[in-house]
Image (cartoon, rainbow, N blue to C red; front, side, top):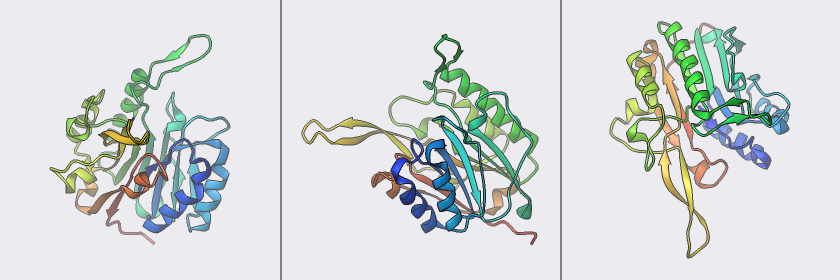
Length: 256
């Protein structure tokens, strides 16, 4: 499963972990993890049987990623030069599986310092997508799962303003990577995150335009292993996070 937990989770950590425990996934990829409560998050995940946890989270408020697993994880030696806190490749040796958890910046996620130096959100997005495509190509003939918040989609994955850099999704398709949810729901429209607008009569915040930002992709070698894939919308509706969960059920044989 993958889930953007929204700004580090704040005081919602226990609720977040409880939702994960209900679904009982073997591997969990979380995005927007932050340093302030990462220790609490890891302790809570450990208590629910996730003995193996890796995270890119360091001191500061930068959005990071985390992978938790019931099987041993080994961080892969595949570093990137920028936005490394949003990139976490691991090997799950017992399953002969590679997993990459990634949080691609949005097109407006500019990163500039007080001196005015830095990088635009669009450039950050391009560069991290380039790394994802390179990783996908290097490991195309292996068992690979790419998961996380990709901040990207095709026209059918958006209401209102279209996505920037949608062609990267098409490149993954050309490499025969499988969007697990779309594979099983070829004509459906569902969204994992919504912009908001205020209801003038009630002053409450309501969903406006929906976007499918969060994905679980598999390499061609796992296409026939896809059993199920779904979006869990309750967690967004009840405001445990502003994103839905994406869960994919894959038939993977263990070497144990």
